[in-house]
Image (tube, rainbow, N blue to C red):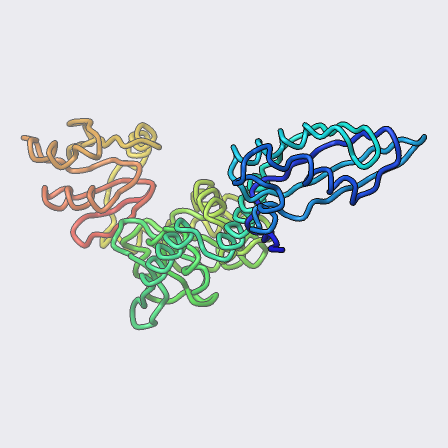
Length: 383
């Protein structure tokens, strides 16, 4: 007798049996083969189908109680849907099992392949998940490429070979060491240079006279000590601190940007140390001013108050009379149109573009609170 392969099973016929008296499993199987014979033609004879492996082993589960027998019948089928339903309907015509009157009723026909599909689907999901977890995502690959490209922008600056990024902009960020520089580059901030220690290098001192400098230090006592040392030796405009207890090299992008947004002017940091503050401003004036300018400082301070925290520029003649007021963005074109000579320019911050415009128009003095560049031709006055 041929056996049906478990792989070939398509359907499972589930039937319920009720018999009036005691019957046994051979009685049930004999009734199925004997009483369906000839009902469906030679192509669907149960015995032949089982020999050919199209009908599998018939399983019968019986229970006897109070002289009656009940049970369940399972018939595996490798036939198609229509042929399987014909077999099931033929089984329901059985009226006797052994010596007993009996009734067989089909409970359901199960599509075994549906269960297999569900298993396949769940297993496929599991396998897919394991593949995805073991492979980096496209976004992660792209991000790693970006980070690698940023870190490759690390370069050495000056004779001291300081770790640095791109220092072409008018403002730079000074950090303590190489690890700090790499972390800022990794997070997309390129205008950075490291001191490579706690001692301020000469290259950064020189840069501090031409750039707007933000000193970015660790959020601990050591960071504050470094800040004071650097301020005593260079022109620093702003100071930014990492969150309390954290180092710049370990900050996330969000923490870096938040810290830089919270930077404070160096005057505010030094407000509790008058001596340091006076030295700081003295250093800036002495560096930029070749000769003392005999101007009315009270009047200049009053004008300086008018432009504080703004991008306004006030142009004065030699008698300190206002010639014009304009924006620092329009300063160059305004100076070109002036018929009267401008003797003094009043601005809150003297940027390289402001100083360049003054030099090209032969202005002799610039008065400002902050200078981010120097000049050998113009008196730069800090009040």
